[in-house]
Image (tube, rainbow, N blue to C red):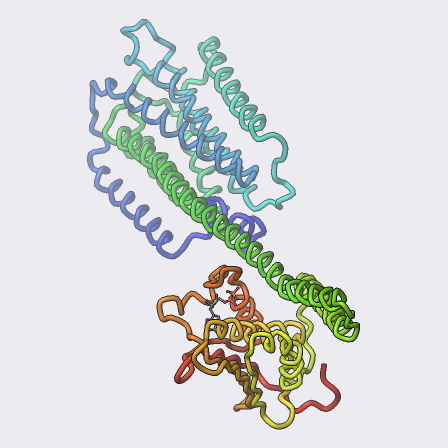
Length: 530
Ligand code: ADP
């Protein structure tokens, strides 16, 4: 694949033709050859009076070639390849010259007073054919140039400049031949029959076409190359029909068939360009849409993240406020109870540290080493979390039971994140118990080592989770609590999955919910864990 193909894999000038396109191209050439052979026996037959069709033919050719040029210039504006610009130039030149060719065609516009020397039309036809052939050859020879050869600068100026240049050259040619008709080479014997000198033109064109065909064949890279080869094949057939099978006689069956072939070949490129442009547009629309979706989901992720930051910080902050108020109350006593006040303040300090750790942890998410994983003993981590939470659970009259596997449960994890997950699950369980009045309020944390995994469960005897909302509890912002942010479970699940584990919930028997988390286990720890 060339660099241009990597940059613009969808463009006609860079897309690699597939097998189906190649087969279709071969099929079209075969059909054209068959059509030529069908026409061949009648090619000599003259069709007098058909001059009347010339303006129609010319108008069609003019439109098709100009549109093709416009599409090629549009293609150039994307891939900026000099070769595509040259090809567009060829089509524009050919399209523009078809007008004076028709206007000067003997017997067509004579009633309008438009007449010219019979050589004029032939010279314009020769200029048109050779100019186009040279442009195609130039395309074939320059198409694989390095990207640094690409044309830079203002696109509008380059394209308008090129169009003005082509129009200027075409106009100069027409004016020159019209004004110097007497000096023109004798291409025509009369209005219908070409002179022997004319034969250089089809031969020269055929040589140029064959050279282009060989160059394209040798370096067939893009869909455009493929269809240009078909066009060249059609143009060769056109020459054979017009100049040889038709006996060089204008308005013969062969001559007209050649014209039709010429139109067909021009329409072919136009058709391919059109269909490719439509495909390109569809792809663009799709990629814009998926880009927008990706941007939206990035935004949602950012919103989720900022909400989770607030969530994680709010927990220690709330606890700090409670403890600080308690401390103040102890001091406001008639006999200030300094001991209690001191321990309340110690809890404030501890929560302050925790809030700072949360901020550090979240900031670490964005750092390269945020994914830093170290050996962790899950049992010790659970004990640490439960100790910290004890204070709050005491206030809520919740009893916490820990049923941990004997010994260490080694995993590789980010200890900060793991603590957040366990404390989220326990805090949720404690919250769920707040409405329970008719039975014991118990949160039970268990840990087990299974095959290659560590399983931790957090059970409670709360109301459990309604089956209607069960599928939503891991969604961001889903919360049934008045002050809840609904980020805890989402955050916990993403942390656990990031560690290669799973987090899910099931019903506890007879009451409440159980949250299960698994993590891949490590070989037993050798040193101290974190
Ligand atoms: P928050 O705690 O801010 O509401 P979470 O994501 O941690 O956010 O929880 C989402 C919801 O899941 C809670 O609002 C609650 O309805 C439900 N939930 C979580 N844990 C439990 C539990 N142990 N028992 C009952 N419901 C729970």
